[in-house]
Image (cartoon, rainbow, N blue to C red):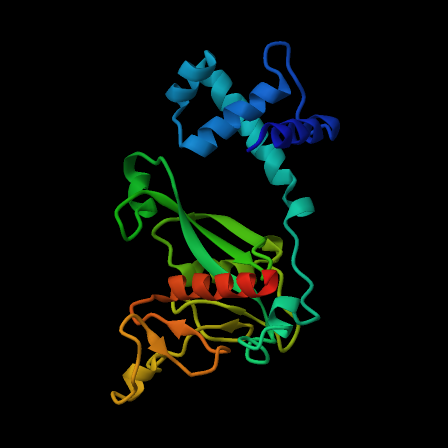
Length: 252
C-alpha cells in the first residue's frame, strides 16, 4: 500500500466515523497495527514488539478495525451488471458467443487460521494446515463481487456454496435466467453454475491420438480465436488462464 493510499484510507475511516482516535492510539496507528498483522501474518506478540503495546491493546484495536472494514463491504463489494454481456466477452472472438451468459467465476480459497485444542481438526484442510475455507466470486474486470467466510478448512467447497445460496442472510447475488457462474469440478453442475462435465474429454489428444499437437500443449485449432491449453493444467489454473486471456484481450 502506498503512502498516499494509506493517508486516503485513514481519512475515509475517520471522516465516516468508522474509526475514532483514543487518547493513546490514533486512527493511523490502529490501521497500521491491523495491516501489519494481516499483511505479514504476524502474531499478537510480533505486534506487541513492533508497536510497543500490550497484547490486550493489540487485540482490541485489531478487532475494532476488522469490524469497521467488514461494515464497509456493502459499499465496495457489489454484484456486477448481469443483464448485459460483459464487453470483454462480447468483443472477444475467443469467448463470444460461447460464454455470453457468463457473469463471473466462483471458487474457494484457504486462508491460514490459528486454532488450538480440539477445534483444530475441523480446520485442517487437505494439506494438513489449519485454515478457513473462503468462497469468492469475481467478474471479468478481475474484481471481487461476493465473498463468504466463516467455514472451517475441512468443509467441502460445494457445502460452502450450498450455504451461500440457501440462507437469505448471505445475500448471494443470483444471476438472472440464462446467466451463470463458472465453477470447477468441486461444485455441482446445476442451475446457474456451470461446471466441467465429468467424464468428458477436454483435450483433443484424449479424443484422437492422431492429432498433431505441440509438446507443451494441445492446439485446439489453427485459428487464433482458440486457446492452446496445456495438458497438465488443472481447472483452477485453467480458470486463471482464461481470465488472463480475457484481461489481455480487453487491454489490447
